[in-house]
Length: 149
Image 1 (cartoon, rainbow, N blue to C red):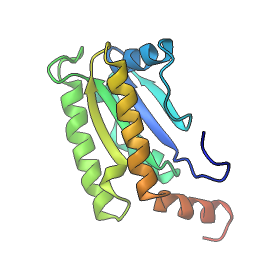
Image 2 (cartoon, helix red, strand yellow; image 1 turned 180 degrees about the vertical axis):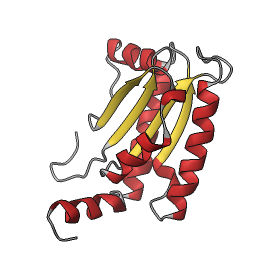
Image 3 (cartoon, one colour; image 1 turned 180 degrees about the horizontal axis):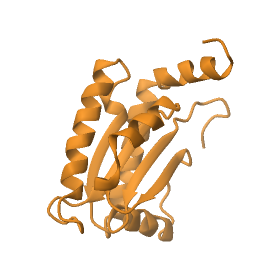
Image 4 (tube, rainbow, N blue to C red; image 1 turned 120 degrees about the horizontal axis):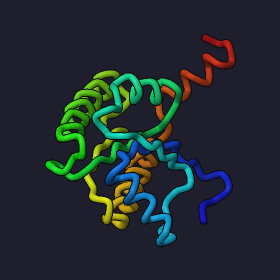
């Protein structure tokens, strides 16, 4: 159990339908535990996740994003996860350049049967983001919504 005042990062996990989402579902069926602050977004394929989706999530104050797709060479849409890998690598570079931190974005490749690996990836992401602290964009968003910027 966490302390009442202990900060929990807001993390989004974009999961492809055929593999990562199935692994997340299997983890739930097996009652495997991970942080309740992680929100799963069901995507048809990680190749359909545009850079704008990820960047907008960060602008809205999300602390970290995990993109979880099929195993390399095992994408149901042939090259979707390879395109997603290129996008996430580029966005990580951008996040580093603007001072947000590239470690706030991670991509993993899973099969539908890899529930323990899914949970481990989520737990690693939570640990990484906790070490980094709240997103610097979150403070900007709060000031903006308060009308101070």
